[in-house]
Each structure stands twice: as structure tokens, then as C-alpha cells.
Image 1 (cartoon, rainbow, N blue to C red):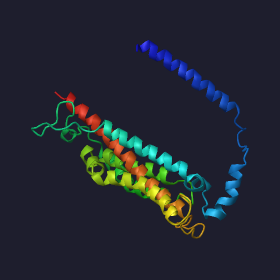
Image 2: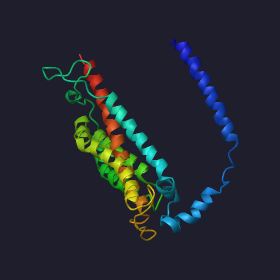
Image 3: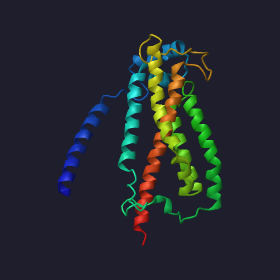
Image 4: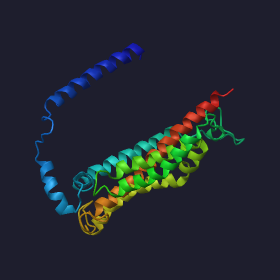
Length: 257
């Protein structure tokens, strides 16, 4: 297909999408007004039924937990697809990669950052890890949850990459443990649902004791599912970042004289 044809096809699709968006935006309620009634019902029932003070996580991981399970496995499938597409080329009989694959481990960072930037990013690395864990484990109490905490945890290795170099980043994220955690986080969500079936309840029924409202270990399966999602999201995004970085370094290596 010619470039002009692709541009016309994109223009038609963009105009159609814009029309649908504008039509939907016209039907939105005025700012600050909520039509209900589902949000009002959840706000009144979630604290008493699920002992969680964050109704968003109550909806995400309990009332519509089956939908969220599908969303998590969409992310899992996307990460798997990226890893398959960007996997390294096979080695030849001499143990060296072909010219197309390159060897990212042999590429060295040439741009050294200032000591101020290195010290600052190293210091906030630990803060990012702690804050990400907090967000993933306190979503049932405050705004946050597994998705938000997982993204913050995935950003922490990038701070180390900025403070140090590519090899420091690879030492953390290239370990098979990261791939195992990505699969374990997704499987943990499904296993929690299977545990409800084993106890004679419907899939993903909240069967864990709800605890006391306001405590970290409250809300039953909501807190457990949020933690599993945090592990899967953190490992998944870390693997994607690593694969793209390895691809970039491979290309830079091939471009060297």
C-alpha cells in the first residue's frame, strides 16, 4: 500500500473516531454531577460488605473481579508477545551471535552522568520500591492498588539504570526470577478464584475472613488479589523495558564501526 493511501485510510479512521468521541462527550453529565445509581449503591455497601474503605478496589477486585482477571491476562499475553518478538537470535556454531542479533552485553554506556544525578537517583530507588509496595498492599484502604503499585515498582529499576549503567540494570531484570514472578502474579489471581470453588462457593467469591475495616489485612480476597496484580504488573513492565532496551543496544552495537 502506498504512503498516500495509508494516510487517507488513517484520516478516515481518525475522523470516524472523532465523531464517535464527540457524540459520546455530548451525552456526558455536567461536571460534578453523577447520574447513578450504581456508584451510590457501591459507596453505601462496600464498607459494610467487604470491609474496604476504597470502593474502587472493591469494584475492581471483587464485584467485577472476573473482568479484572481478564484484563490482567491481557497484559500477561502482551508481555509474552513482546518477549517472543524481541527474543535474541540463536547463536551460531561458534558461540557468537549473528550480525542481526548482536550482543547487548558487549555494549558499554559512554555518557557518564554527574555525581549529583547518580546520588539522587540511587537514593530515590529505595523510596520508589517502598512506595510501590505500599501502594500495592494498601489499595483496599486508600487510592491505589496492584496496577498502580506495580507500575511504580517497575520504574524503580529504571532509576538504577539512570544512576549506574546498562549492566547494573541487566543484573536486576535479566534474572529468570523476574519471568517467574510475572507468571506467578497472574496465576495467583486465578488460584484465589479456584480456592473459592474448592470451598463450595462461586469463582472469585470473597471467602477469606474480612478482618477489621481500616486494617491492612482487611477486605478478604481484595487485598490478596491486589498484591498478586502488583507482582504481575511490576514484573511484566520490567520485562518489557528490558526487552526494548536490549533491542536498542543490539542496534547500537551493529551500527558501531
